[in-house]
Length: 218
Length: 242
Ligand SMILES: Nc1ncnc2c1ncn2[C@@H]1O[C@H](COP(=O)(O)OP(=O)(O)OP(=O)(O)O)[C@@H](O)[C@H]1O
Ligand SMILES: [Mg+2]
Image (cartoon, rainbow over all chains, first blue to last red; front, side):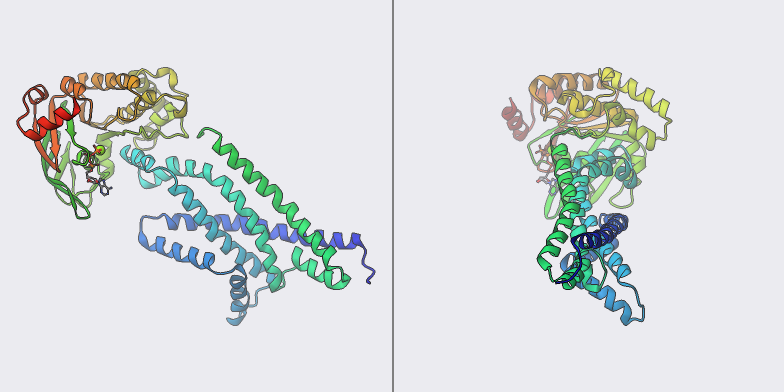
């Protein structure tokens, strides 16, 4: 039995949780910005960006996040670029997030009825004007709930970065479990930590969902 | 010189030859009632006139704007051609007033005040001046369609295309919309209307165009054609409606 106190365990786990939160926020914000680029490429009228974006999405949706991280982390050292685990983690999760958000948002844009495009086109609006004034404002409204919902996946996805050595909540937990020989207690607390991060997000997403279904379109 | 001139127009959807050589001249101020069975190509013809639908062969000219199978200046064309749809297609996130103002501001580049004044006068014209700040889902179907008319009129089009604009309305709301259209016709607006309202077509239309299997099968003065159809197809169609 080690002499690590429960309060030490909790304090260390809170430190790890802060990194989990930081990584999640980074990936979500940067991934959201990159996701906008993916969205616009995906719905472009020119087929070239459309195909590229589709391939991009398929790569990130069709392979495990862990493999994406491995390839970024080990692949970069292979080409002589030593990037630290935190950077590989942030980069990997950002790309992962951008692919998913781009695809979620594309679905929202395509959910806007064809009549909205036709009516705005008939008023002589250009494609960009239609997007800016008619389509995106409506798509944004239906995008909020699934976007917040997806943020839960980002938080949980950060756990995978422990494998390339990024010391976030899960990695902190493994190290503590090894040191204390109390894996059940430690991982129970780790799980509680994830729940505390994710539950408010999923509850908020559900609330938004209900609000949108029960409300007017403005 | 006709305001709208359609010559030898052909359109396919895949292997479906939908428009099979349409020739039609429309004079300024004319009200055209386009009738025919479901699938005869009425909507498709209408939608080629503002470039919502492309075509394969032939030509369309609207007030000097040529529509070609390729490379049309759609913006210039659509400034001259307004369209009203069966499903209204108002922008649900904008108020009635904002719906009417939007394109005048961003396409016609009107200032905010001028656009607002114009929107108010257009809503007044369709009898909805007090609904400026109402959202579409706070309006009845008939009111929504009148806002859609005001929205199209605010762009000051030379021609207005109407595709079964009363078909989605409850029967008691049809007349308020038809009354607005009748006023427009009286003011000299050029109208091309696909309609199932035969009484309206007869009263307000200057020319009846009967489409049959992608062609103009018969056309002429509505009163005369209704009383005395020249082809069995039109006679059958009129019989099936009444
Ligand atoms: N977007 C499309 N893709 C493929 N086929 C189409 C499309 N739009 C119309 N068609 C076909 O073209 C033909 C003419 O359709 P159109 O909508 O012009 O007829 P319509 O006379 O307006 O009929 P309705 O009275 O039912 O509105 C039909 O056979 C229809 O199935
Ligand atoms: Mg039709």
